[in-house]
Length: 342
Image (cartoon, rainbow, N blue to C red; front, side, top):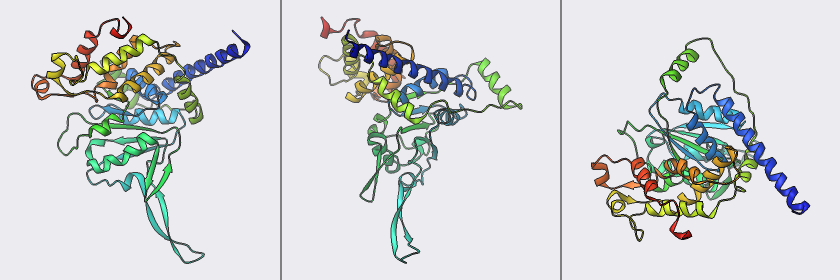
């Protein structure tokens, strides 16, 4: 190994160690405020490292908002929360041009007043309570990290994340997210009830004089560096083909798809699913101390990456088959060795 290659290797190793330490500090700070939900916090951190957005789904009162706010504080990122309602307008999110009088000249000029989307971490609370037109105001920001208003494009400050919540049990007065909107989210994370011991600790913390404060442990610049480090993690060829087998097997119109897939799945995931599950797996691998992606990383992240990208058929819904059950069956039926490597 040449001195140049050795120096590059040591530099990459140092980056990886800094990333692991940053993640440890973030989770430590969040745990001061949020009891349990370790898997959810890990998935949120993975999404941030993979430069992705998250859709959190859970009943009210599970600390989803508190979790997101705590993450932003631990990363020293600017934070804004938008409560989505049926009367919310796109301009309420992106901002709008307003007429202001110049006191020096007396002329009236159009001045752009920035909306709450101009932040680093945006919480879109109950995103499915607003009409599709307003939901669509987030599309450009989530994909391009920029906002266009009145023909002028404004860049958003990096790093930029959208973490949205929706209530799965209340359907009246809601507007299901369009497929294009859902596909912009890296993860669809299910936030479940805490265990009995965790709920007991929640009672102790919130009904007494106990208090805790979150300290910022990383900066936005460090998060951007960590995002670059994640992309350096190598992807073994057999793991790449496992991802391709998994995603393509979920498409009912794919040649050679299983009969049950054509019966149970109406629409399958697109290429973005492959891209995002790989990036997320790279982040998971490195924060767990590994410098390469394994099949286990893909299996662990298949559910949050695919559950909002698979549309079940009426037959599947009538039989009470959940999307997670469909994903489990897909994983079970993929052979240990990809056909592409035989």
